[in-house]
Length: 224
Image (tube, rainbow, N blue to C red; front, side, top):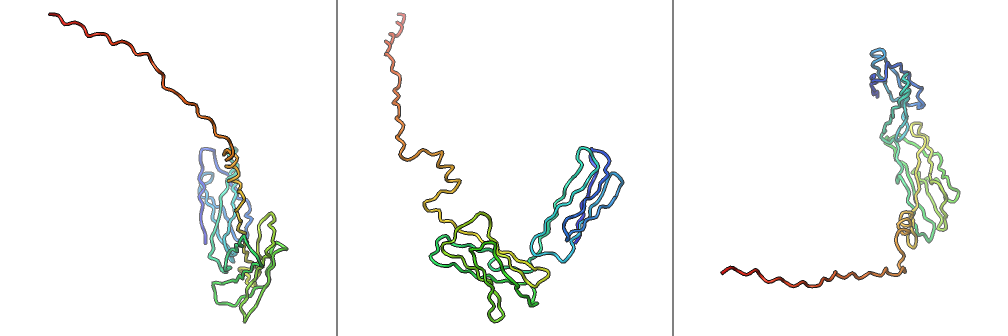
């Protein structure tokens, strides 16, 4: 698949563009001159095999202009997942009286046989184990009831024998029990609110101003 980006001269002067090397191995970019100093094209091509999921990179063009020496183009591609983890994300409940367990399996989009080679997690207090029952492989995740959260994210890495999708990652998140706690947003609002034990502010009673009644003059006499 190839896409084209057009670069046209503006008010900054004559273009003398050069394209910096692309950092992604799945992207090939080529700068073509259409009108010297005026108009150019950048051809961006995706190179297979593409990795599972989303591809993102950035192209940087040196313009040769003093006011705007460089300009950048974002390149992204969404590939239909070749292999999907089910479930895609693990959510651990807040209240646990025993070990919490969840099985994860991989589903490929083709009928070729594939195998899970290993499964690891970036937290020593969480256990992962690869099980194989009648040729069906699953990754069993186990979280103890007294698990203590640490800073950072929790991620399971599953490695496979598929060269086009050799690695699948499954994030782990934990539900928080907010009973008796305040989130950062709630705490911020609580500081602005007066405490419930604060005495009421006395209300000053205002009276309407009174005025002394003035005598009403008699009507003028009518001529006979």
